[in-house]
Each structure stands twice: as structure tokens, then as C-alpha cells.
Length: 265
Image (cartoon, rainbow, N blue to C red; front, side, top):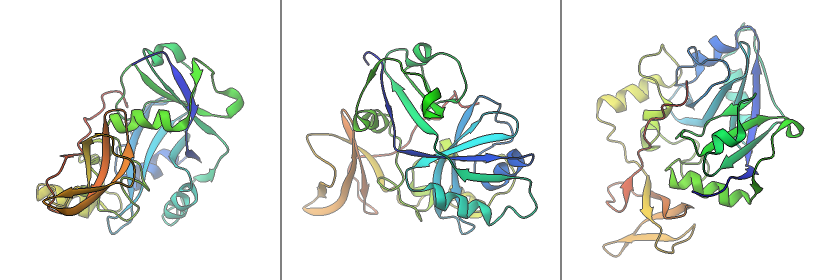
């Protein structure tokens, strides 16, 4: 990598708090939230009861009763709408906040940023990437400010898809490439679990439409061809690779399969 760079990335932060916040989020999200310690973060899919993707969220536990869910800009309201349908009598409130997500990337970024509130790991963890979530006035400034697209290239290099580009609201979980990172198969029930379990028992045979490709000078929106036929569209560009959505049965590229992070809990 290189010297540390930072930018406030395009994320909306939903604050979820209350005596029942932990139990409620655990019952609704596909990953294990109950065992998430304060000061730690984890990624999870949020699904409709039918199993389709509503959002790919990062859950950060700020205290026993306060969590943030950060999602792509513009998805905060729909995230709350989906969660509110199942609140019932739970003691939990949620709102889209004005908090920001400041991303730091570069050699030993975690050490450079140091300890403090709101630290959250990108899914791949490691020592060279960390985000800080909180009020803009409280966020650290370390290293050189850069452009958001520059930060986004690190995401693509790590093979992490973005909702609205690489995966879409309404997709089937097995096609996202993140089930191994964002789903727990040992927790209790949650909406959409049946479809996830059924696809997994079949060997996740649903078409994974997000693939990692050699960049080769292509840009976002470029059409991919195989045997003279259009088979997909490039959706995100990194430093040395790209992500694309491809047609079922297409063999171009490599299926997206992010390694499971060891730095979430």
C-alpha cells in the first residue's frame, strides 16, 4: 500500500438504540448480532421474509444498547421501513442520523488511527484499513484527504460488492458472493432464512452474477463478451481488477468469494 489516505465515504448511518436493540437486530439480521461485543463490528445481510436482499449492512455496537447500521447512501430510509415492520413491542427506536463514515486506507492505518469510539472494520479486516463512524466534528483527521472514488478502489480490490452497483436490492442471497461473510448458519431464525438455507443445501447453485476480473483498461458500464455474445456489464473498478454482473452460465472471470474476516468480533 502507501501512506494513509482518508475520505468520508458515501454511507448513511442508521442509529438503533433501546433496551431490546441487541435482541431485535439479532432476530432480524442474517448474522450473529447477539455475540457482538461493544466496540466491534460485523457485516450482515438484511433480507425480506421471502429471502430477497434488502441491504448489506455493517453493524457496529457502540454500547450495550446503541448500535449503528451503515449502508449505501439513499438506503437508510428503506432499511428502517423494513425493520419497523417487525418491531412490535420491542423497546427499540431507530433513525437516519447525520453521522459520517470516515475511511482510512494505507500502511498500518489501524495503528495510525488508534483506539477510540466508532471504530469499524471493512469486511476484510487487516492492519491497513479502518473506518470511524460518528459526528463529523468528532472524527479524526490522519494522513492525506483523498477522493471517494480512490477509497472505493480498495473495496473493489478486496472483492467486496456494493449494493446498487454490483448487487441489487431484490437479489437472491446466493448470488451476492457474501453469504460466507454476512450470514451465520448457527444462529436462530430470521426473516428470509429458509431461502438461504435451501440454496446452501443445494450447493449455492444460483448464478453468482458478481465476478472479479482483470481490469485490462475497461471502465464501468463496459460490456463483457464471451464467444461473441454479451454476457455481462462491469459495475465497479479497482486498481487491478473489476467487478461485473454476468449472465447465468457465463464462465468469464472468477466468482466473487470474499474470505471470511477474522476481525469482526
